[in-house]
Length: 357
Image (cartoon, rainbow, N blue to C red; front, top):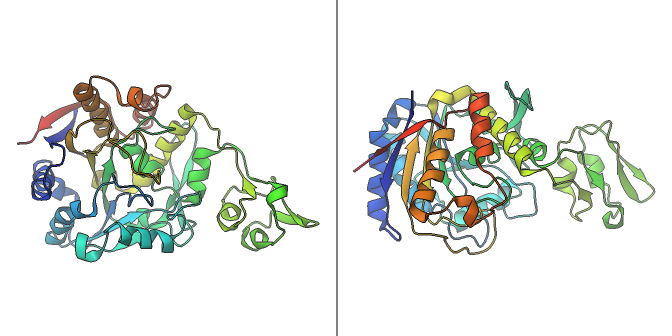
C-alpha cells in the first residue's frame, strides 16, 4: 500500500496567519491527533538554527502544533541535541540561550525546551535495532523517554547526505554524542600532540581510563577507548582529533540506522512535517545567512520519514526543474538513505500525494 503524504502549497513570504492555518489543516487532514493521547509527553523535534542562521523554521511557526497537542491534554516540549563541534549548540546551556535568542521562548511557542541529550550530549539510551551496520545505536535519552513525537524539518541540501530531510533530522539530530561520532567517524580519536597543553582534563572525564599522560602530552589507548567523545567535548584546545572522512554513502546508511533507533519505540506515534520553505544549499548548522535556491513550495505531513523525504525530493525537482543535489552537492546521492531506509524497515519510497486545499 502506498504511503500517504499530505501537501499544502505555500508561497514565498506567505504571511504568518496563513502558514498557521495551513499547519492546522495538515494536522487535521492527516489525522495526526490519532497519534497522541492525554498526559503523554510529546517531543517536537526541530532545529533552533546555528548562530547567524536565519532560514531555519521560525519560532513563530510552532504555536499551532503546540496548541493542538495541549487541546488533546498532552504535554508538548520542543527538543534538539548538542552538536560535536565548537558551536553555540555544543552544550545545553549555550544551546538554550541561542534558542531563546532565536525566539524559541514559552511565550512565543507555548512550550518549554528540553535538550534531549543533556548538559554535554552524553545522556543516552542504547537501542537495539536490526540494521545492516549496527545492532544497537546510541540515542538521546529524552527522545526515547517521550511517548510520541512530531518531527519538524526544514528541507535543505546537505554537504554529506545530499538532503537535510526528516531522516537526517532524527538520525543525526536525535543521536547522542557517541551516536553522532559513530556516524561521522570509522576510527577512534587520537591526540594532536602539538596542540595538547597537558592540562589533564580529558583524563578526568574519560569513563574507561583510556587516557594517560606521556610526559606533558595526553595519549589515548585505542584498545580501551569506547569512542564516547567525552575527550572531544571537554578539550578546550582542539587537541583531540577524529577522522571525519567517512564517505557520504556510508554516513547516510549509518545515519538512517540511527533514525530507526530514534523512533523504534514509537514508530506508530511519530509524525513528520517537512517545510519546503527557504530551501538553501546547506543545512541550518551553518553560521551564515544563506540565500534560498528557489521559491518556496509548501509544507508536507506524513507518518513515514522515507516517504516524506522522497516526496520532498520529487517536489523540488518538479518545481525547480532540477534535483536538490544538483543545486547543492551534485556528487552526492540522497537516495542512498531512502533505499537503505526501505531495506531496514524505516519506511517506504512508494507514496502518493494528497493535496490539501
